[in-house]
Amino acid sequence: MQNGAGMEKSKKRKIIFWIIVFAALPVAFLAYIPFAMMGPMVDRHVDYDEVWSAADFGITAEPFFVTTRDGLRIAAHEVTTSGPKAVIVCLSGIHNPSVTAFFGHARLFQEHGYASVLVDLRAHGASGGDVICLGYKEHLDVRAVVEWIEAQAAYRGLPIVVFGLSMGGASAIIATGKIAAIDGLISLSAYSSWQDVFYEGMAAQAPALLARIVKPFSVLAASIKFGVNGWRLSPRIEINNLGKRPALLMHSRGDSQVPFACFERLRRSAPAHVETFVRQGDRHFLTDHFTAPEKDPEYAQTLLGFLERHFPGE
Image (tube, rainbow, N blue to C red; front, side):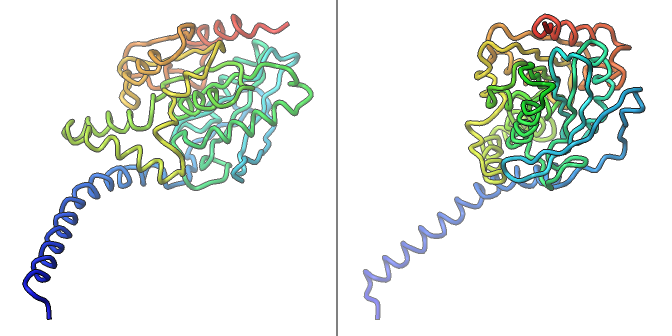
């Protein structure tokens, strides 16, 4: 039978237990919010309603597959040219368009002496995987393609430039930071980090204070979900590893999908030599003629001018 002192200690332990429980509930709720918001976005394989073929653009492409270091089969399309000056690796966004929309760019590049490889990132199109990794693991897909390019006799010793849109732009930045064999970077409408774009998206729909409180939990959620250290892996961090390699960051001021603030953060973090191109309005794709970039001379010349300055060939 418990004495009075024992009963008092037991009572105190129960009180402490319930204090901990009630204190933990709000934290658990805050931690749950990013998982709930992220799930429908990433727990899927993207099967596109609209895809293009190389023939639609009057060119030919050779499909091929590579395998990543974590065992996923990644699909890609190669567009060749005679005596290429460089190879451009094209990456698309989180849900659209299909990377086959880049065949218009591939045609433009081919006409100016550049080969292209269009890559379906993991969980997209013909590639394997059923979880989109928000750039945290897509650099593995890029690495597998870069290794394939390096193994081709026709491309031996040629510069490799990674060219990405939106999440593909973020993945391109991370890949460039991690893969020394990449010689140049072109990024369109990339986010500076997952937590930045998560916070800004949430703040547009919920009280800013709540979004600010939840923001750190978005990194925790991504770290747990993808098995990475989200605090040490982001485009804003990896762009510091660019070194002297040339890069072009492109964005529109009114972008409603990836806020212009992400571009500004990337620019501040980037080496001073990095080039930029900014358009007015809400143009997440930067141009109204994404599948036919030659119809937008300013946009097309920005891309070609960057390539010709830094990768002119022999």
